[in-house]
Amino acid sequence: PNRLTRLMADGTLDITFGDEGIVPLAFDAYEITPSVLTSNQDEDLIVGGIYYAGESTDIAPVLAKYTNAGVLDTTFGDQGIAFLDEISYGNKTVETLATQSDGKLVGVSSTGSEIFLFRLLPNGDWDPHFGTNGKISITTGSRGFKVALQPQGIIVATAASEFGSTILVRRYTYTNGDLDTSFGINGESIIQFNEIMLPVQKVAVTLTNNILVVTPFAV
Image 1 (tube, one colour):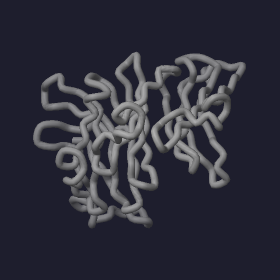
Image 2 (spheres, one colour):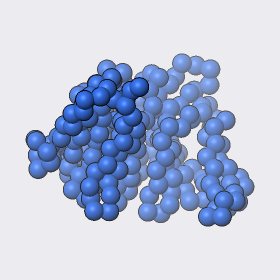
Image 3 (cartoon, one colour):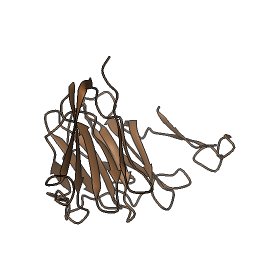
Image 4 (cartoon, one colour):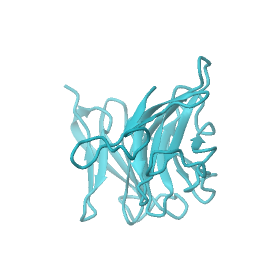
């Protein structure tokens, strides 16, 4: 099975984590293929990815939360697992994930033609105050969606098309997920390049609150 591993600061396995430093990402009926990882202020770990239920075709994005000791946090979702079937049921994973200071989880997943920004409460339930039942459709853009957090709001960056020359950066409010109209023009900033770019790889916020977007150019 896929595994989660934790090392000490000196590079040795942390034997207090899971089984001698290793946690398998497999359970009774399914296995998680991880794509993203985040942590909270308690150093709990939240793994985002896609789950496969045995040999069946049951596939959907999922989050799994582990305590600092590497044990599933049974207070989260369904015995430690939050299934995101409401967003997508098919071969789609969690593309990006971040933890707010209040423990809420913000991420992006898709159903193919439609992309969703979602937020879960610290216990793994959908946040009813964010968008529509915890979800916001963000159909503008392509793959390569990445999320970062500013004090002012949630930053989402993407390439405006799969092989285009435009980067689209939006900021959403923490209160309800509306576009923050104080950012850019009506909540979004568009960056135009002369070269053709591939999907956004990373977005980050500096200590001075500036926004960094990393994207490769097509050769």
